[in-house]
Amino acid sequence: GAVVSQHPSWVICKSGTSVKIECRSLDFQATTMFWYRQFPKQSLMLMATSNEGSKATYEQGVEKDKFLINHASLTLSTLTVTSAHPEDSSFYICSARPMDSYGYTFGSGTRLTVV
Amino acid sequence: SQQGEEDPQALSIQEGENATMNCSYKTSINNLQWYRQNSGRGLVHLILIRSNEREKHSGRLRVTLDTSKKSSSLLITASRAADTASYFCATETGANNLFFGTGTRLTVIP
Image (tube, rainbow over the protein chains, first blue to last red):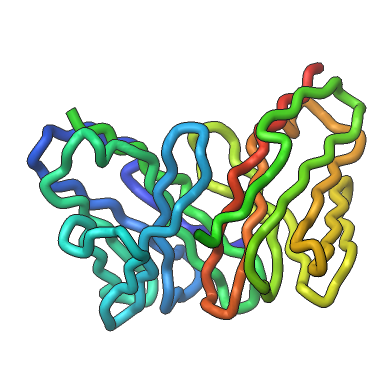
């Protein structure tokens, strides 16, 4: 089946630094990928939709300059958390939908801890 | 917010029993999907039901959809300890993205 690879699976960084999270579709092309954020024991909140070759679409309340998204190829989208702060600590998950599938395939998620 | 709500928030049952989770949503949808998430991991797609469908089965899973009430239910029959996870409903509108419900944490006791 379709696989979305996300890494790192966890990262600890200092306040003020930037962290890049990668999301790759391994066996299918994804013109669109989705980035979610999940707080402990809560639901997934859509942050942005990543579009290959064009600008990402951000959900209301999500800072574009804070969460930089790049979708430079049909198999790779990256999310960079810039100038991270402790309140950015969360679980970030990406997803994409293969063309021959109705369901979405999710990455395994990235646990970000900002200290 | 387009986020749906699920109930119960948490459910604990004995192995072999059936588990029922409910989901309510707010807007018109193209389809509704159910996902499973093991602790600290990504989500796994379980089943999709289209807006013109009322019931769907997949193995031990049974999903119903009532668009007039904007609600859906997921039934897991003959539960197993390995079914322990969080279950989320997610609605897909014409915008081609998913909005998730609040989730139900299911614990199946061996």
